[in-house]
Amino acid sequence: MAAGYLDILRARHAARLLAGTLVGRLPSGTAHIAIVLFTRAEGGSYTLAGALAAVYGLSTAVGQPLLGRAVDLYGQPRVQLPAAVVSALGMALLALVGLESLPLAYGAVVVAGVFTPPLEGGLRALWPSVLGGEDRVHRAYAMDAVAQEVMFTVGPLLVTVLVSLWSPAAALLVINAIGVLGALSVVLSEPSRAWRSAPREAHWLGALRSPGLLALLGSFFFVGLALGSITVAGVAYADDHGRESVYGWLMAALGLGALIGGAVYGARQWAGAPERRLRVIVALLALGYLPLMLTPGVVAMTALAAVAGVFLAPAIACSFIVVDRHAPRGTVTEAFSWLVTTFGVGAAVGTAVAGPAVELGGTSWSFAVAGAGGVAALVVLLATGRVLAVPGRTAVSVRGSENDRNGAVEPGFSSGHQA
Image (tube, rainbow, N blue to C red):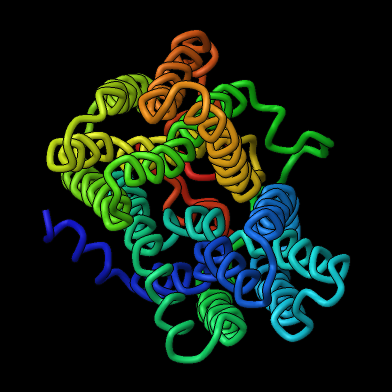
């Protein structure tokens, strides 16, 4: 298992691109907790903190596909680095001005969110040109999903350390400065500078004109909803058991399960169409969420959370392959960015729905939201099976992907060229 991942990391530029992308995404991965801690330190209410964090999330959801389309049109360096700088300046404005002017504070988080660089989609567009073969690209997608889990675990810890050593304002400034350095590392790399999107058909819908991509986005909205609801349900469960640490154990178990599932999934080769494989994985994901409604004791619940997380990273990794197969020619970065946006919006909706569910029916009802989200995601995939069965491109491996100016093609996997 480890040998396969080491093979990827030993590829030229691979480790730098992965590390730079993860570091560059620290601001977006930690923004919600950083904004909440900063708002509370400035004397703001939890309601204001939640509102600012929600505005940031919605702004990011709007900006990602727009910036992704700009990357496809103008290349990565021209978009990623300026966006990272402007986003960091937005957070710096919030940190320096504080809450004295609420319109200015909201404007600052809007700027920070809208201009969050689409590094996640950009990295996935680069993998085929860096790694070449189908199996290595698929493994890289799985490693990417696992690395995200690590970032979302380590990032909040880093914020809390910076807050304890300095202040919430300093944490905002430092995290965003680090993010700019990560983006800089990516855009200065040879693959990023050389990457060019394939010629695209002019269409106002861009990547969204693909029926297969729309079907996938519909499913992953509900996957995001399930995951978002678990964050609220976990807090309610911890409150029921009178210990805040229980929430940490549940989230850690969920992340550990995802790490294990992603590592195992990426360690082997998979036969058959990824669309069919995704239906099986999402079915198992939904099956893992449903037992959480039982809300047993802490030890058993922690074990159930670990099981529930096992199929999350494989589902995300497999979705990357499906996105790549269905994205219209010349829209690969935008398509990946739409997946990020849809997942994020689903998570926000899940968080909003789980709260009232707790008040109406207790903790088990909030976990039922997660189970319902998983089932709904599967239903969408089953209902759109015919659409997903017709990929936007023939499965061919493009060693240079969309930045291969010679257009070299070899049998295997599609990464940016329509058949």
